[in-house]
Image 1 (cartoon, helix red, strand yellow):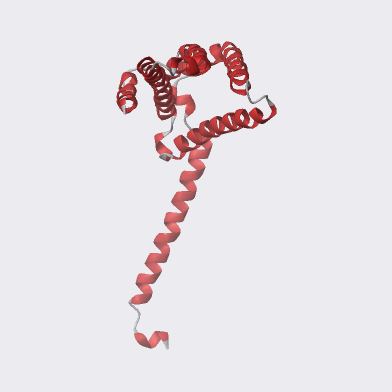
Image 2 (cartoon, one colour):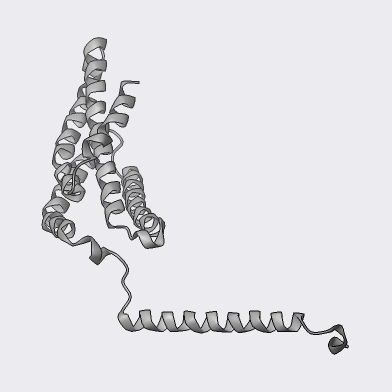
Length: 200
């Protein structure tokens, strides 16, 4: 139950930031560090279980920090996608970006769970935590400058833009369609005024 307050309050911390993607990158550092402490807690949990008060207090504290970072990253990611989405095509742009993001998360989590079958059961969790922390550090070092460059791109460059020739051509086609529709409407009006004998 205390974690619900974390889920509700943490997104408000990002309501005024103008660089959500940079915040997302910076929040990966404490999240990687927190993974080490969670792994240590899991390792020593059989010994801590004899002290229920300390065990549950530490458990709630670690879960609260983990959920806070996860929801802050989710809010930052959603804020950036909403910022760069082209409002002229509604939520289609945002849905596409969110779908690609969700696909990446599902593929990586599925790969981690599947690879656990090939590891020793006693150490599978600790091996995967170590490997994932290492991969996270490598990914962060490689993409750090890229994230800053993506955040610095003007929002207009993320939007869909048509060339002037394409705009004139589409306007011309729209004008021709309107002209044809107007002629059809006019011919229908004239036909409706004809006497009944002309139809026979």
